Image (cartoon, rainbow, N blue to C red):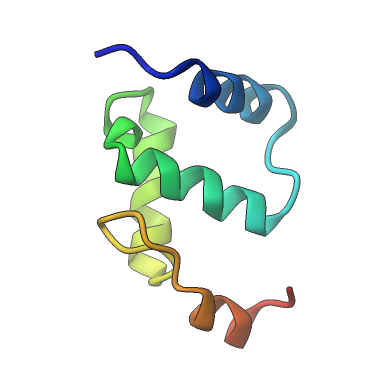
Length: 75
């Protein structure tokens, strides 16, 4: 399974600098979850994806729960 170059660039960015913001973090992990790559990369990605899913911020399909986000975090 070949990871698209755009996603590889985001992974490198995350590895080098971490998340720019919580919104960026959610969008990044949303993409990893929806494409199922979260569980094929190193363990950190799967653990973080599971934690975000358990929090209810992203569904198992990769959909971000912006309402929950707005209730608990500032935009």
